[in-house]
Image 1 (cartoon, helix red, strand yellow):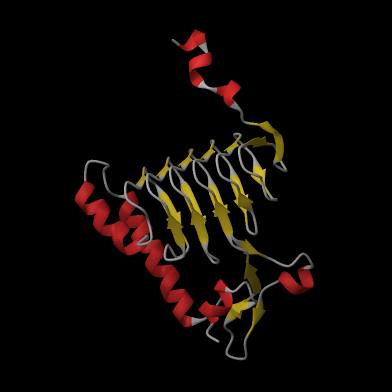
Image 2 (tube, one colour; image 1 turned 90 degrees about the vertical axis):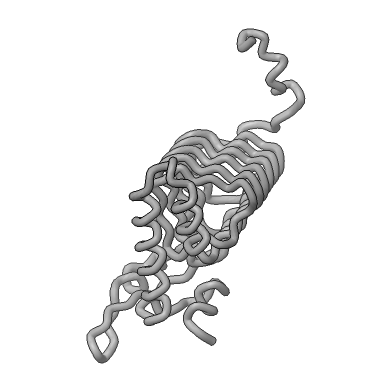
Length: 205
């Protein structure tokens, strides 16, 4: 079993594996290239994203800057939108549905480190190469979700369809469909219902 396969399966893997180092360096370089483009450079941006984030649906738009660990292990549906400073540590698969909006400064982070420092601290191979014990858990975000600004979604979390995650939230557990959830740790505040329809907010029109 390759170290990449171990990583994607949520097993302890060797972070110093040459193929993983190469893949991360590639994604970091492509992220930097994307971040140096203007939003009017549509063709150039598309070429970079085709390599960096090939598993994205039609109509996906990333404002930039963006930061990916691999880019290869995130899949988005159609009409995905990410505002400034999207960070995706896709050491395990990150799966995002259709029509998902992500506000500025949001992070999707799959890696997990051991709680005990005896397990977490850097180790060294016989040749002096540093490594650590690391594993990851997948993230799933359903269709029609909005993550407001400064949201962090941790590994192992599934956010259901039609959810809104309030600004500044840290999502550490699953959120069921059609909920407004917020806080640190993020908790369900209430269900989103027909009473939240925009046409009922007369003050906006």
